Amino acid sequence: MALQLPATMQVFERGWLSSNNVLFTGADTALVDSGYLTHAPQTLALVRHALDERPLARLLNTHLHSDHCGGNALLQSTYACHTAIPAADAVKVASWDEDALSYRATGQQCARFNFDALLAPGDSLTLGDLSWEVLAAPGHDPHALLLFCASHGILVSGDALWENGFGVIFPELAGEPGFIEARATLDLIATLDARVVIPGHGRMFGDVGGALARAYSRLDYLSSDPRRNAENAVKVMVKFLLLERQRIALVELPGVLASIPVVGSAMGLMGGEAFADDRPLVERMNSTPSPAYIALANWAIASLIRARAARIDGEWLLDA
Image (tube, rainbow, N blue to C red; front, side, top):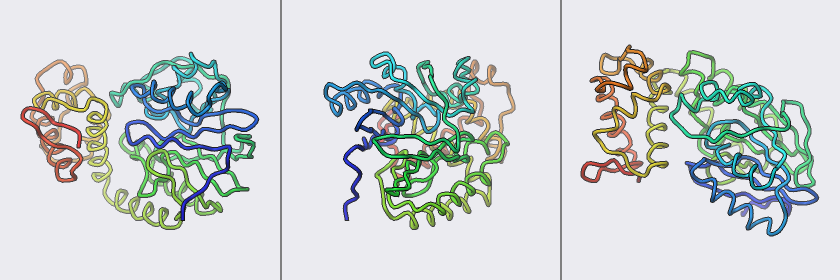
């Protein structure tokens, strides 16, 4: 049975480089999440088409990973929209600390944006003439948020719950707790009477119980051996690079991986002499890639090809 949303809601399903966007109309207009920087013109075009002549009044972010807020700057410059972000990230955004915001750590792009208001667990919002609760969703990101409309059983889940899993548990790569928090978030979602979930990536779905069962199973698998989360993170990072660039020269991939701090953190958890490089980041970035990164690049290429997520054409690794 096809899922139906209220007339004041529309979802732009964007694929995997950009997060999905949720547009609200009614008495006021608002957009939740804005996609990746290189897709910002497409985000703007989608919003303009859907709103016709109406301006976008508000912009909100479930969390501040680059694929969820990369269109913020363009939307702000176009509409001067009132922008609300997770409260715990306010200082980082105000000072535009790209290290703390993860953009430098992941080697991803995000144009600087500002904010007008903060979102915190326990807040209540009106979006699309409907009442929404703001709930905490740590795990994938320590400061991520959920939006839940109890009257219609609609959950905007960001990367806390997809139809088949959830986003990379990044805190664990930095030696911080993430698995326990992700489980607590799934437990919270299980208490909600959610009948429709709009995830950060992928199609919206109604089998919430099935999605939760798959997410718990995935979390059990990853948390039973931290190497699995690290391996998943590396594959996700390379796939993201391919989605952004479409192709990467095979000979350049080890150096690209060496320039991304979060990949270095993941290597430390993957174990084995082949994936060991204790050199400082600056040294790694400005020298011939070590055998560790060459081995890692070869492993990532093989893994993505097996999963049919990439292919080789001559001297290039291509998205698939």
